[in-house]
Amino acid sequence: MEVGLVPVIPLGFAFFLPFIAFLTGRRRGVVIAYALTALTVTFLAGIWLFNKVYSSDEPLVYAFGNWVAPIGIVFEVDKLSATLVLADTFGFLLAGIYSAKFIRTHGLEFFYTFLLGLEAGTLGAFMTGDAFNAFVMLEVMGASAYAIVGFYRNRSEAIEGAFKYGISGAVATSLYFLALGFIYASFGTLNMADLSAKFHGIPFPVTDRLFGEPTLALAIFFALTISMVLVKSAIFPGHYWLPSAYSGAPIPVGAVLSGFVEPVGIYLLARYTYTLFHGLPFWKTLSLVFLTLGAATAFLGSIMMLVQKNVKRLIAYSTILHMGYLFMTLGVGTQLALMAIDFHIVNHAIAKMLLFFTVGAFIYKTGKTNIEDLAGVGREMPINTFLFGLVTLSLVGVPPLNVFFSKMLIFNALLQVSPLAASVVVITSAIAAWAYFQLFVTLWRGKPVEGHNHKDEEPERRDVPLFVVVNSVLGILVVVLGVLAPVIIDKFFYPAAVQAMDYRSYIDAVLNYSKAVLG
Image (cartoon, rainbow, N blue to C red; front, side, top):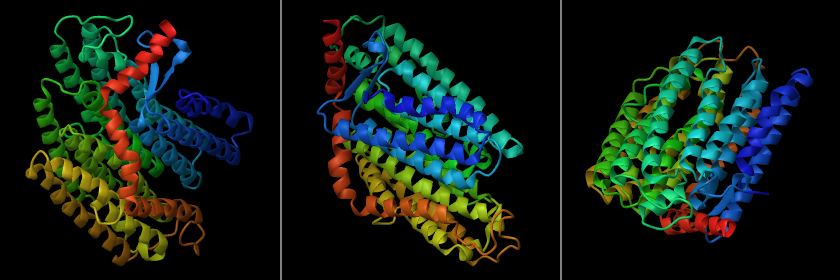
């Protein structure tokens, strides 16, 4: 198998899914089987890629159509990328399985088509070795996300969420497109390894010199790219669209958006600041921007969690809170910080999917999203409620659960900058803990609302078996990734951070490949 095929797999399956559905009379069983086959094959490809990358001493390079860098577009996958690809393919598979029961409306084939397109976009963004191709992947990801957020097109909140997301996302990617123009005008290339080589004064085939003042071009590039990330990753003040999008989107969609789509912008900034342009002359200014906006985002997210009446919006602000942590950590600039970012993206994705899925089970049973309407339903679904309690403890940072350890890494990284910056994690976690506690009390001790059982659900059923299985898998991971965190960090995430910060290795992987082809 070729490295570049991993994101092509879900994209190819997505293209044929509507035709398969049409030819089989839109039979639900056929659509689900086809989609889950696609997601499973992609997950197996993710495992293969992870093993292949960790068996290699240098990043893997794949040139599309044998057009090598910097002439053509390449994928370049290192250990940092591989950890995110593996988590991504696993998360989308679980979301697909969960959706087989949760999504009961017509148009299931289009739901899975958009889900597979969304997976292809995120995988491509994590794997790309070309700045322009990152823009293409953002567009693939965005088009799928806007459509799937508005999947419930007969609901006003879904249309509002999709509209806000679509307009904001289009403006954000346009800003990034402008950023590419400025950097191409100065560096004469958009290949990431070539950009890094030019920045560090290393010769590269075909392109051989800079034009104008690269510092100014880089400053404009980062200003525009950060503006894009503020929207794409819901960082204050670009967070405004996310609560509406999550309110209107189906629960499995919110899970993958929170776990894998929003972190894409954080990943791209980490790649640019930690690998390609490490040692920027205006790094102190960038660091201050990251720390300030990240702290503001964390406080905003945690405080707004306290006042939400809709459970989906509460989870949305929880996502904003954690994106704030990641954005703050970008401002540290150390190997520890990059390791913390990588580990927290994975841990947050696993935990947030479990949070979405447990809340989704409550919504499935009651048909309600207002917290008051969910009062007492937790007693009717004890397994689901236990897993909900477990994941909220993880997200606020209770040991030995998984998010505690990545939060600890973030805290230690921020402590290298300032105790005040590190205290943001503690204070906002305490605020979020109170919000989760209030929600748990309402779910467990609140006075039940009549008619909890959904009209399509058998009255005697308490926990939906499929939801129990999926949520139990995630619950086990929350515990295992926490208990084994020291071993996992040393074996996977520490090497990923070391390799990602080795810009010379990143350059050499593409340089050697290009020289071999070009002679």
